[in-house]
Image 1 (tube, helix red, strand yellow):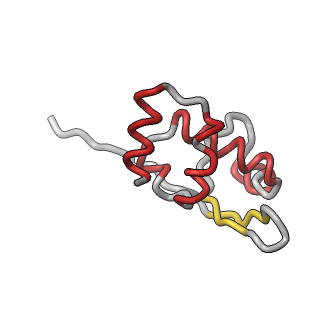
Image 2 (cartoon, one colour; image 1 turned 30 degrees about the horizontal axis):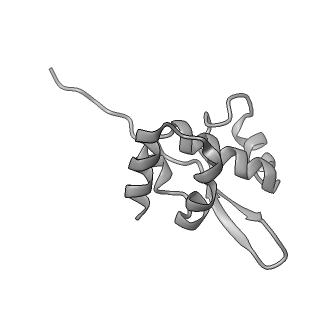
Amino acid sequence: MKRTFRWVKSVGTVQVALGPDHEITLPVFPGILKHPTVDELRDLLLNPAVARKYTVLALRKAPWQVLREFPREWLEACVVEADLRPGRESALRFLLS
């Protein structure tokens, strides 16, 4: 029997202004934030607080295949507040190093 796997893919990217001189590009993955549609998610991610929560939730539950599309520096900045299980935190820190 042959198995077919669907790989998760982003549906685009969003430029998020974190400050006057600092901007990041985040991938848009529906399902990390549960209820918004793809278009709503793009609009929501323009808010830096929502972008941070989105990244923290991705750190908690998304596979590495998804996380590797996020900016590495942004993941490292958000991993502290993600409150991860010790095993997941050490694995993510290893993958980010």
